[in-house]
Image 1 (cartoon, rainbow, N blue to C red):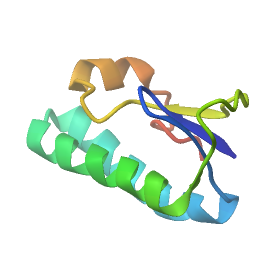
Image 2 (cartoon, rainbow, N blue to C red; image 1 turned 180 degrees about the horizontal axis):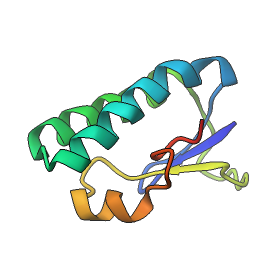
Image 3 (tube, rainbow, N blue to C red; image 1 turned 120 degrees about the vertical axis):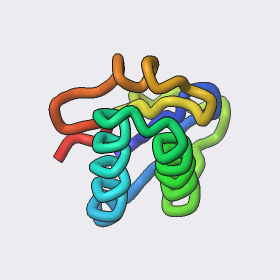
Length: 92
């Protein structure tokens, strides 16, 4: 799956990593619902770090369609809330 981190670029992730990413996504959703800004910041950072660590960066000039778009590390709680579906940022 191709994942875009807004403002950074794209990475290719194996589907096998989505169990780990979904756990972080669930935490992020809980923190957003409770208004836990500090927890939200930490978990968003952990989610993006996991995507960077587990994924293979695509070249900057690659224009692959992104199947998943994640907010950048500086995104506000409200900006991320606008991006959420019922499943969080990561479907499944």
